Image 1: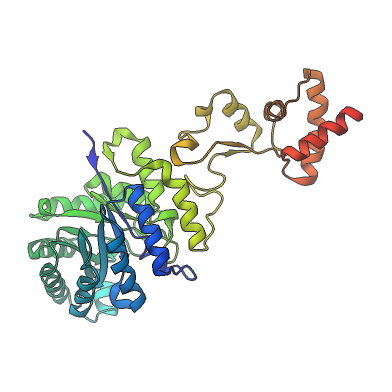
Image 2: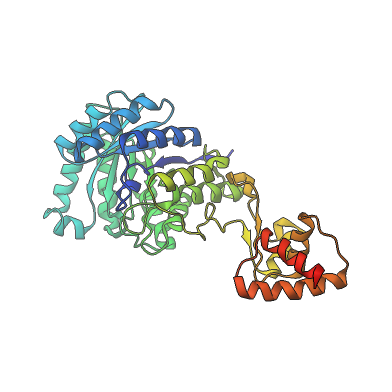
Length: 384
């Protein structure tokens, strides 16, 4: 049997940190309900101490969903943890997510602290959170640049204190995939009580490596992934939920699965995009408008002969109606013939050559040729 990968969605917390993409409480609740239908295991609903609005959003999301764990973020500070616990009082499955910086850069320049003091503060935070909830996740911020021996000591200490999940984020998107595999492998092999907690991946996309690093972490032993719809989030964003879900679904030989209902991916992508007023780039994997669009004549010909020549996922698997044949000056005769036949036109091969020549002239002028353009082209061709 394949192993379960827990999907921790932070669209409503880290995703909402994108400038200009803040959500109202009602909008957060609406998206949370869709995330529940999607099949996510944990919803990080907000950072309660940060504002009254975020506190209220965590309360209302906790009331609105029943299946997923609802998680609230806090720093390793007593007041933060108290606020998180209060905001989660209506949650059926509450989790407090608390933590502190783990890299020497953060320890020195953010906290003006020492490694031993960081461990002490982290342990105290977990123990305090444990007074409120059984499920406590600890994040070791900037783990990607942390000393590995120290990171192993910190992980061991917070698990002893009661952490059920330990999040080892690549906060700055710095690590290479092979390094991520080696780092998580080191933690799995050098923390004596590692079997008492789940290791989680929370990777940022500053160098475009978030998805690759998350997969590498899974292969090394991580069993929770912290992701967002459309990969939104701080700076260059987070690991994309839809990419991880479909990688694990397509590559069955990896031996992992999620509870994600993949046919909801495109609809929820559109919902988040419109609600947050943040367009999805056209070439975005899985949910971009061009993800199932074919423009090159060579690709169109191969796709029309057999879809698997150029598509490893069917559009219906992710909630897209159909693939698109986009007619441009790069398109070939096969694609033009296919589209014209769909419009009800019939012609001999010699006629197609003439039509195709006129089509290329048109495509060079207007860039993309739609059905209305083709109908007009055929009328002009008949009367020419």
